[in-house]
Image (tube, rainbow, N blue to C red; front, side, top):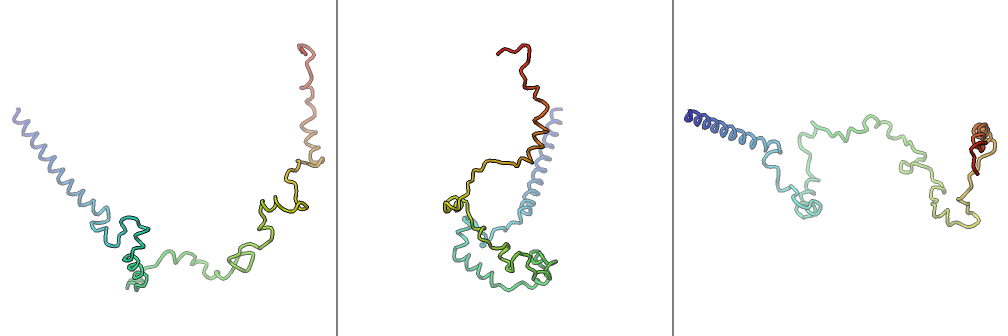
Length: 166
């Protein structure tokens, strides 16, 4: 019985090792495809400080060469989505929908638009306006309010006749 149990344990170990080997082979093969392949770094990949590395002479030269490069032969088979933005309204592009004739100036110029609070506070004394004005409502507006809310409950504020001690 002990010999049979030892054989079963040995068989389990062999199956487990075989399964682990097969699993590690699959995960290593799939790991490269999930990351974009084995050769994802090239001599054009920026590795460290990207901002400063772009200013190095060999990167400047390659960027200039890429800028003057001829388009590929398949350029007629693809398009950019950025070129299609606004295609539905290209015929109405000549219409300027601002208050002025210039598309850069979208509002009318006025001298009041350049006024500042500092300029208002430090103007000539004859032009100064007091900023602290007491609140005031016309008597006609307040009359209806007073009639509704201040009449009829004066008895609540009278002193009681019994139990009152001055």
